[in-house]
Amino acid sequence: RVTVSPLERRRRGLGRRRRIIPETECPENALCSIQQFEEPCEVNSSSLILCRTPAIKSRPPSIQVKLEFVLDNLSFDFNSLHPSHFSYEVDPILKPLNADDHTKPYRHKPGSVISVEGENLDLAISKDEVEARIGVGICGVKTLTKHHLYCEPPSEQPAPLHRAKREGTDSLPEFTVQMGNKNFRLGRVQYDTESQLTFPLEAQIGLGVGASFVALIVLIIVFIYRRKSKQALRDYKKVQIQLENLETSVRDRCKKEFTDLMTEMMDLTSDLVGTGIPFLDYKS
Image (cartoon, rainbow, N blue to C red):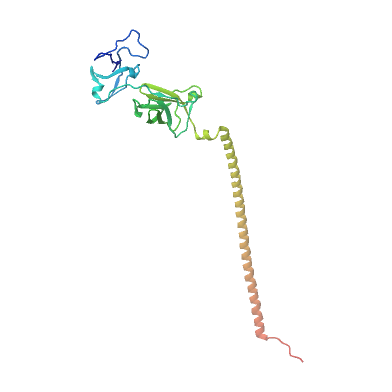
């Protein structure tokens, strides 16, 4: 439970403080009376409870704040339990992702982080308490500074939280950031794939047709080459067989001719041995 009240101020000439008496007409955005705001807590375990800070309407500089935990009609003052004083900070401000044109989606390149600019982002909250989403997907918060929030989105484009009936910008997921009771809607996100960034649809169709034509030519060349190779192999084998046959016939012919020659020489030798060498007498 949070109790907020107007600041006490010291009157001139007096040594004690007195609370401001509420005026009949209260200025706008000013606190003129004591107010209380309550927020239920969640019991996490026997030794831990989780409580959301109640939302208040007045600006922090103009109020005094007292935080109490009420358990079974027992009240525990936060200042008596914690060494630091409890105070409210100004609300954070987040700028849309597409600062140039809020109506157009933010183009995101897969593999990169999303950077969000703002003010007063880390005054009263840590990065573990911030929840960033792209549609149904979680964008993990990596860094939170006073003016920047960096989160790592999913590798693929998530589906939108609410399905749109028509195709278009409404069918893209929306980037939202939850910081306490504040929910910021910072625009829709569209993932850019490498094919979309590099080639338009007409180029993709032309590339596909050209690749098919080249593949057909290559197949025809391979078919002709294989056919020619088989024909050359058949011709080579045919020539080889002819050479082998010619070699065999030449070898057989040589053997036969050599045998005939030897037979004739043996006959001639036998004739010379039996009758001698014939010669004519010398006549003068």
